[in-house]
Length: 527
Ligand code: HEM
Image (cartoon, rainbow, N blue to C red; front, top):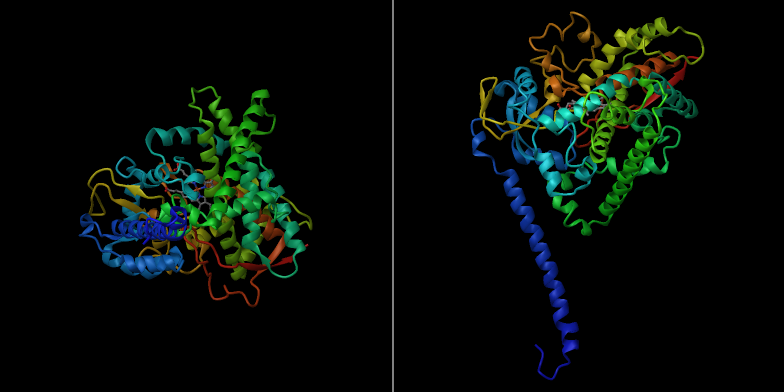
């Protein structure tokens, strides 16, 4: 204690200030602990309305997520063993709390077609409005993948014609030639996944909005680094589940602050690109062929167009471009990585696919690129691509839906306000739906093959379905066909002797996205 004769300044500095500081930290600590406990309680408490549904224990799910197990691990450990007993309808704890997990093809069909009863959930938008986290700042508060009704229709109406008109086979070919330079430069196996990530980043940069990342040639480039800094960090478990750590308490995490700074730079780049593109277009129409124009140009042109089209604001355009970026970049590189792996691991299938490619493009010892028309002439290669994304679906599930009313799915009551997670992996690996589901067999997708003879084709869902089917599907398939056909023409593929994938495809430990772990492939030139 201090006496009346003490110097008040000294007393404040020596006695009170440290104790205030101590208590400030104590209070802060207590506030964080309280926040975490109350949030955890709200997130983990099992909703009474799901009492009639079989649940996957929350602790098991959380442990799996904290261990960074991927969705494939969770599907094989929890969902698939529970499938028969539940007819593919169960509950599990996820990023947004308890969800009804659906892996029943008939139920999936209902969800995809009754969009008024099963709209996209607004959990993400609500979170985006409440918390300016890295992921919500990047996606913005609304975009085509999350919006419903008028907001969704407006965006899709502008983007649909852009995706129909843009099929830039020449740009895909140019980018594939850059990839070949990198393959030819490397001695030994190529880390194909990393190379394909750079290839698809260039593709979406150029074709999305005419921006040259030049990532295939310069992996250490400034914008490549900034983009990866953001994209690699948005799906961090602790910030997804406790968004306040990414906002209110961000000051406690200096490394995380740097990711926010990278994002601010990336966002201002997007804004500048839109502004610049609008100015360019205002000067006069572009004379580039329609199918080689970038998506941003086509969307601005559509908004300026004849049919009373509702134009998107700059912010809406930015959100859509970011969405195309995130939805179309890693998904396509992961799909191609898987296809190349399955080709390398199955020499007979590789030989058959090459025969098809050579019959269309010839076997002259020089680079030849497929035209848009020729891309339609690769049915067997297309089956390989389809089977690859059955076994390695880049999107392991659909965006959460939320029931608008009490309803029923495959005879099971689903109360109003339930979050619905369609689980693609548990459909694709399901032995009750597919024959020998772990086997790589492209002929499942042949005319009259297994898929066509199934009771429901909704057992196969790599691009979703119904009106919300992936808008970039044909774009991605064209990109893959150009690259894969040209690779097959130029190289023989094999797995290195010490490949970790010798006994089957091994997935990385990652949340939200499914990708092969450290995929290396040997490329031997044919000419
Ligand atoms: C192999 C590559 C791809 C896969 C596996 C994939 C997968 C999917 C899936 C499953 C959905 C449906 C989501 C749902 O219903 O909740 C979807 C939607 C979407 N995808 Fe893709 N995608 C791919 C490539 C692309 C590309 C290249 C783009 C754009 C350049 C793109 C843009 C979108 C958009 C904007 C949506 C939302 C559509 C809507 O709700 O109307 N995707 N994608």
